[in-house]
Image (tube, rainbow, N blue to C red; front, side, top):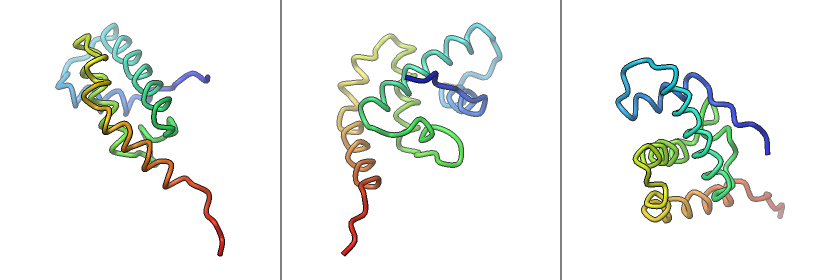
Length: 106
């Protein structure tokens, strides 16, 4: 598995979602790790590409799941996230598969 790159823009969006208005290098490093773990978890369960979380190809549903993953991770409740967002994860997985299914001709 490749290293997950967290852009400054994505870090700032997560900080905004969490109402973090201050700059702290150590806190940003910890938050970046939480974002990476969230992306790894969501991509493994849904099949979405890492590019779905940031940039021009952003999938706002995937990004919303990521933001909430980080919120739960900061509270030490990732297991609760997995329970509370199971239907959202399954829905994203299903939508992603349908949108990226090979097109049949005929």
